[in-house]
Image (cartoon, rainbow over all chains, first blue to last red):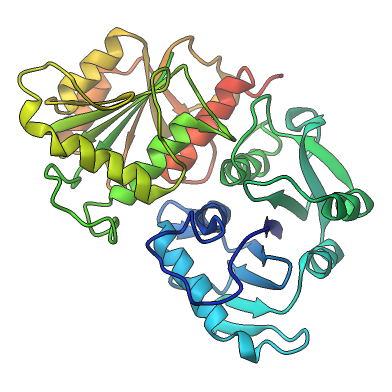
Length: 197
Length: 197
């Protein structure tokens, strides 16, 4: 499985927001593009993918490719799935995930716990401009890519990542948006490390 | 320069549309993601890029990286730039471009003329699942990538492309959304054909 863990530092934790201003809603637009970049192919879903979006270190919304229904490519409808998930936040008690729409779950977990969960199932890859160039290294079997939103990781997040990450990989010489990095990471895996297909 | 030409088959040609339903507005969401994938880096603009979006074979909106101001990563604000361009469609007379916001112009040109304009300045690359794998071929100096929206190219467009395209290149084994293909194409160029950086 391929996993993407995306950290939304200012993301909403309350469903009381308008879909008309996603950038003004803790840059929810950034997180929505990360979800669709992670899960969608042209007219298809990547079934072997899980995307976990951490909302302000309080909640995590998990999108499971193998079970997902109703994910469209546009930002607004993806944001609506997040809002629907938050609508049921009272039901997310302890660490039990609540399925809020098909293939979408809400968990009361912050970054550290979500990172630990993901790391248990795969090789954590920290995408970093100073990492090993992707073309020079084999992609792991079950990668967990950890990305931040429009802001850099906090000191605490960086320390947790440094502890947990197995590898640092660079996808290219230009600084990419998170969702674009996800697309390139998929291509790296789809083509066996840009070597063949 | 890198050019991307994106064909919107059902795209609006009239500014009288709501920003609340971009998928229902001729899949304007698809076109907006192509624009931002083509032009944006993290906290920066790709100055050596031009993105031309053909609207229902009637108009073309051209985004010029070297002059662009006010392009944000979200779909809605990009759609607003298209709407502002269409607001001034009465001024787009003959083939003279009208600058409708900094770095954004409207032209009364359809696919064939926009393709001819682009081809005059570069090497036309048809992204195609059966093309030469990108990793096995050198990227051209001044590529013009031609992409369709959520629909395939029409027969007429395919015939024009076959006449004009210098190369057919495949970016990987999975069918990608247009905006994701743009992101991968950029990475191919950024890394000298996935060879180094």
